[in-house]
Image 1 (cartoon, each protein chain N blue to C red):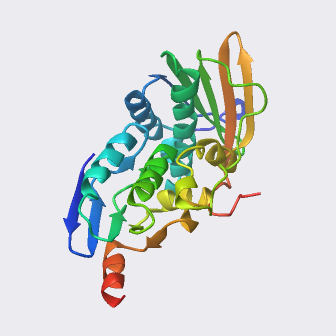
Image 2: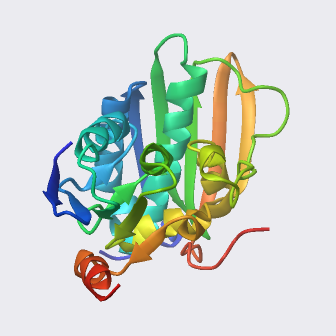
Length: 158
Length: 113
């Protein structure tokens, strides 16, 4: 196809609306990773994208829609420097303050105190950049970027 | 959630026959494992070679199984695929579990030990 000077950067975008239950979220994820722009990524980066998106969606199902159900809108877009994600829901607002992101305490402690949860935000924080949360017109709007050099292989622990 | 278990006196080998342990299947996974570990062998090895995707719900379920087994029985993992390995490393859970390259390695380790 001849390139046109006015569209040298043609963005690829996928948009999907899923219901807020675990089975629908799984189907939605499988559909999104099979569509551009995620389908064109190398396997390791596609795995990271699927993981981060799964954590974000699971949090929405468990917390924002904990007392009800609704839709979740996901937009995935190719951007200079990586893949941009926008996730919008009509559920309850996040508690005040920035999104959590610390590893739960208790690692290396005794067996009874090993954490079984609280890993989600840590994974999201570790694998994304430009994470932003806003509440707009009674909706939660979360956006983030998975940069093109994110392979999840370096220890991003701080 | 399809799990395939092989029991000997010393070891229970459990193969996960699905390609995901996620929020939609974590509870089933934990319930199936609870049944499987009724057999009293001291070592339990979970073969994750077929699992391409594990989220924090799946990770939480695996940690829960370790707790169910208590301190006297060992719960070991084998065959982590690259994305699954990342989840363990980024959450530092790779320091909590013994992880073998494959189920065969885990079982032959037992023979040597």
